[in-house]
Image: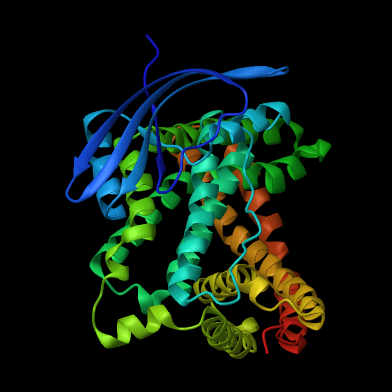
Length: 414
């Protein structure tokens, strides 16, 4: 018997099936003042290039408080291992046709209406980020490095949104969600770090014939560590904690406590124009980066890391709010602004990678010295660390140049 593993939530409509053979069993539920239809769908989405079996429980709110819908979903997920599914059946069918089934899902362009409030904008951004996170679930379980990367991008974007909209998100539930997103990011981090280390350090060493044997030993050691890191990521994504988190975030975005705070200030923040909010927030974040970056050469690695995170949040924010400034002149300014910001972020990211790589090579050498690895590893780990350290000075000066270019780039939101 096919197991029911998916849980789709629809606040307003049924998903339309494009290419399928399905059996559906439906019942009506009452929860509080809400009327909910629960339908068990079992069948296959088919295309010429392949098929995908589907067995999922679809919940549709017919009437009443949307919060009740998410509470029912949470109760069901605790009783049986259901995972949130945000793709419609037709989307899964089109993915088969396009050969994109279980491939990494990149961030999609965000559209915020011109008359949107700040609360409206956060909901739109939140759902877009959650779709990217959930959409990479299968790719991560397949061991796809791009899936790991894109899920982490989705997590970083959502965490950036929490920071950008923080004045509306002062409640306990929002702080709890932030902590759980940080947990999941941490579970995926080691796998991504290993992937970057192999691409940027190990492969460079393998290109030198003089280090051929030692580089092979290093590669074997790192691949072993990578296997452990990927198992950690997969364990996280198959856990009850992950499934609960996805449902929690969905309910929090749509009906969370941040929407119900009744004091005057909280209400005013929610109702503020998204465009006015974006103008203020982007301006303040840009000003802080311009100020802090002037002393970039003097910053310790952890402060450079904080500057990099600030640049990343500004970039995500600029992408979130881009559609609110649609004029042709703004589009040209946006392109040059984002390019300058990306170049700065790339340099700061490379510097942060060097620090991470040095920490990993030190760990490899330490384990080798303790007799846990092959004898060539301390030597090649030292070579790798030296090569990374030699890049620091030139990258720092390049980052300073990129910061000056960023400071000259005109904001597109004024």
